[in-house]
Structures are given as C-alpha cells and as structure tokens.
Image 1: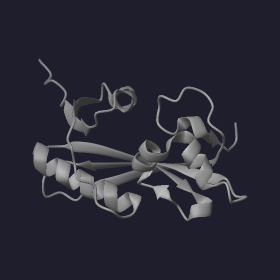
Image 2: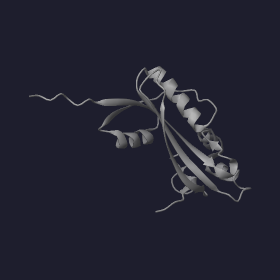
Image 3: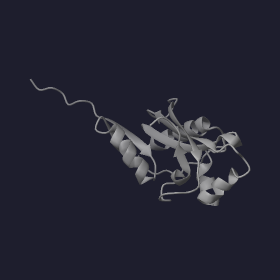
Image 4: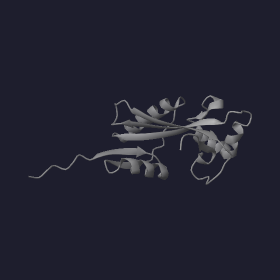
Length: 159
C-alpha cells in the first residue's frame, strides 16, 4: 500500500528584507514552504493593525494566492505610540541619534517593539492578525547599525 504524499502548504512572504525572510523560514519550514516576493505596496496611514491588514489584502489581490505580510513598529510611550508604524520613514529621515533626540525632553524612555503579521489564504478572505510586543527602552545607539532601529532599543524584561 502506498500512502499519499502529505499536503505541502505554501505561503508567499511579502518582503525584500533577507533578514526577515531567513527568520520566517526558520520558524515555518519545513511544515510550510515559504516563497518570497517583493511588492511595492502603498501603505495607508493608521494603526499598526490597520496598516498590516490593508497591506495583506493588497498583497493577496496581487499574488492571487496565500500571503504573509509583516510590519514592525517602534512605539515610544512618551509620544503616545509614535513613531509606531511609521518607524521606517522616521529612521530613514532621522537616524539613530535623531530618534533618541525625539525623547530628549522626556524622562520616560520606555518603548515597545511591536511585530504584527497578517496571513490571508487569498483574495476575498479576511486576513488573520498575529502580534508580538516586547517592552524595552530607548538607549543611545550601540552595536551594529545595519538592522534598522535595533541599535537603540534595549529589551526590558525577565532574563
């Protein structure tokens, strides 16, 4: 008797970031085959959840299949969550020191790193959100500057 091959699930991870692709593949494969596609998606203004859901819907329509999108934000508590989902543009415009300078007038240097994923099986399906939040604080830049704002975010939690 020959058993049928197990069903192989696949998803298109929408990213141009090799670091993020490597991390997602390490988590999902071999159970789910991860293919990567780069799409230049318009990002709406809104909350991290609204931005990620909209990005997922647009990607599913363009790919015409299952997609996984990710949006990472950095929320400064003293600034009521800003820069939030706009961290990419803040980082590009201000750099590490400029982001530190945004908090210069505030005693509160606490922040949250928020990673939001959305999955859709394809066009017309409402995406499912997954979110992880890490508490930390903003510190002067240290370490390698090559992975976004990591150089200024210090994890604050149990070790």
